[in-house]
Image (cartoon, rainbow, N blue to C red):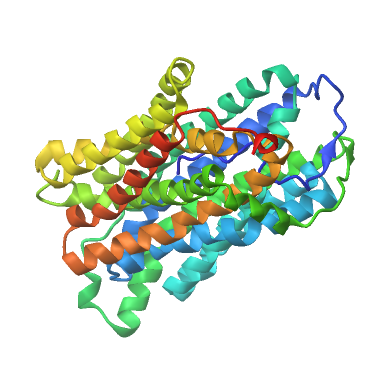
Length: 437
């Protein structure tokens, strides 16, 4: 999934490394942080590949299949604030190692999930995996800004986020080969009882092997991070009531921005989750599951390219106007895709990734304008809004089931983009600081 959590995700109460005015000059740690961005971005985007696999194996409707995203993104609402508390107590590097180990455990849980051939166990494994990713994200964004001179922190964050986008581009292609390439020709609807259980156990073997490989890689990275746990000298920050930050929601610019993060992540994830099934439709491209899965990187790759283009455009134009423009572009592409057939329908949907590229960081920066010292508190609130990825996708799936059309189901993501476009127009002018209100 292609979104970029804010640089201070761990909230104002996170431990603060005493790096001095020039920051930590630790190129080896920066390399590992870039690797983390690549890995957790890639693992998140694998959901777009595993959804059609589980839908076929467990004969699920779209609403049920998209519960995969609900199980995954619920972790952001549940784990982010406890993760910040762990950072306060254990520090950045130890917490990063804990997050990696949690991710590894989530991958290993795919083994009992396969043996039980139960959809609910897969959802639990995905939740544990996402909990680990949430912990790592709480650490990675603020830490990468500290590993070097403050004047180059924006450059490092942008570079790190490019690795995240690279992961979301590469992993779906590899996953489509390993996971979707083995979709059987047997129709599970014709099986029952022991035969169905045996079929599911056999077919989930490819999923298990993929995640076991990821578990091994995560274990290695966790060991490297743990071996460097004492590289940073950290002083715990004063304890604060995390709920105090919620009063920022009363500020329209910030409150609407948090809502737009919720809607953006939900819309982006919903579209990404449906791409494979969408492109398999005879009226669209009529591709096999494996071939459709290989097209998912175009969606995320568009976001990668758009980030570099947007970085230049945002230096020339008002962020609010740019946000309104790309959100409007997403709406037009959805309308084009839903009202056309063949290649036009398929490729216009994939092109939405290009429009998505700058939305998360632009919404975050607009919402945070004028917060001053409370910016870190605001980022802690915004990260919980990522839970939109757990709510909007299954609602989109429900619309698909009720209407019998994936094209009509796109109306919900389109409505999300309408609100985002309106927010961009509303926030096209610079915000007043809290002291000026």
